Image (tube, rainbow over all chains, first blue to last red; front, side, top):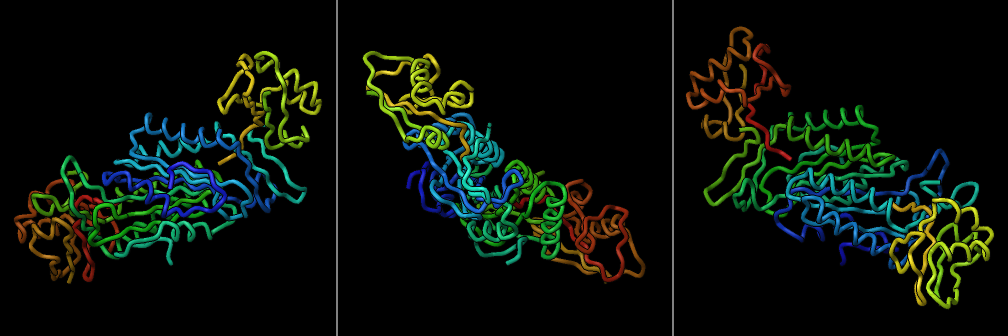
Length: 140
Length: 140
Length: 82
Length: 82
């Protein structure tokens, strides 16, 4: 299993953490960010999500985030998985798993990576609301 | 299963995250801190760990951390599990699972909770090294 | 031939997933934008704004980036992953 | 009767897991410390320092906290959980 992936299927947090922990027995702290499909957005009720990505480019951006995280933070390994396609409310969307010897580094890298993912990765979310399906622009 | 527990057995990260996510379909972000048994400490090789706690008081302190986290951060739910007894290198020790509508709050609460756990919870670690078994004092 | 790919809401506005152009010589991103605005009036306002990013061969590009025969250009509305 | 419990490295130094004291009237934590230093010379230095916390009935206490008959006192070396 690759450390950085875009896939339609759901993922197992246990499996992703094991994958990252396999990098070293010197890992003392793992910080995980899990993004889940919540039932509201800007006050509106959401009944489902659908994600589209730019194949090839999205994977390249995520790999670039991993490489920069390894270079800029004192972490041992980091994994990134993002789902695409239809996602039901309550289901998982994205998982970032950062591992380090000491916990501060993993917290910083994990928070940086999810912010960078949102900023630089060509993935788009469509929300199903009462009024129909709407593409979400984080910066309208 | 309780949201705050001290137990000898290992835990499933998936199961703990599901437990916390069950609190609300408004959860958009979950931040998990996992502490694992690493193979070195202050330059020394560690071959195993053994944790002791003050039964009753340790659980009370962890519940207090949960309640203060819910009061002081904009989170929806938080769970804390700490293992005691013998723990092998690479195994998991502690898991903190913080869930919120927006990710910043979960990051802040999770990092605060693990720091507070280390500071205020009567749990003690004994490390097995070449030279024998040594109790660890974080502040000697 | 170059391929221009539309993503997310741009697909709906352009009523297309992609568009191919035959070019005789390399052009800039700015020049391609002018061609697109003519062929897809519904994209005109959005292409004049600052919210759409452009990629050339899967890398972020700017208005001066050169597009050569065989290149793939992406029109990327604001991301909303994560 | 009050019960004093030793944890982690203090168990090894005291060579005991706990010790019971019969008290005729409530005493302070400071007074208990003096009794312990007499009975457990190996704990003397550490009880004079600032690294050991004291609990009374599972709550953190200070040197003026009152200990009554039936109370449980914990001698808590620096924590190393997490």
